[in-house]
Image 1: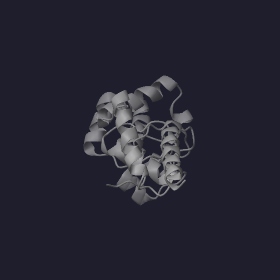
Image 2: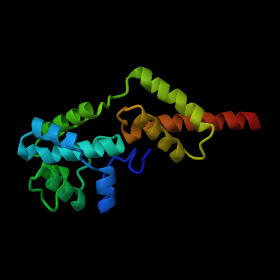
Image 3: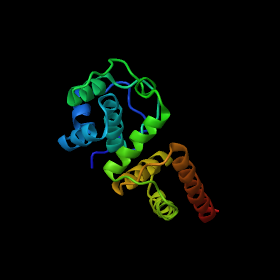
Length: 180
């Protein structure tokens, strides 16, 4: 599995051409779906949401500046002009449009939000994995991969960190009880 961007909640400020073409590529099917669904002025935003979701498992909510390489690539593939410097704020004048693009991209990719049963399954899996993980960060990265492989939308960083910390504390208490 290509996991360079799995679990990331924002784009880096710069992307190499290789990263754009390898991790953020638009297929012919993607282009056809975007062109069919959205008017020309909304296509670039939808495409960026789609490729980011596919690469990371997260929706793109950060209002940071988007990498020029990605903007140029999306514009070329869609045949639409894109700004050389842009952020989600400049692409989306309405939050509702951002949300609609995210919902569409999730549906298109078959990603679903975690339900209570899946949260319980994730917690059980993380408890098992924590016994072998060397750090909290490694446990979180494994959780991102677990979610991504199951086509589950990766929840907020805070929610996963809270779950991982509670599991990690339980492991540490168990170790201390064994030692003491």
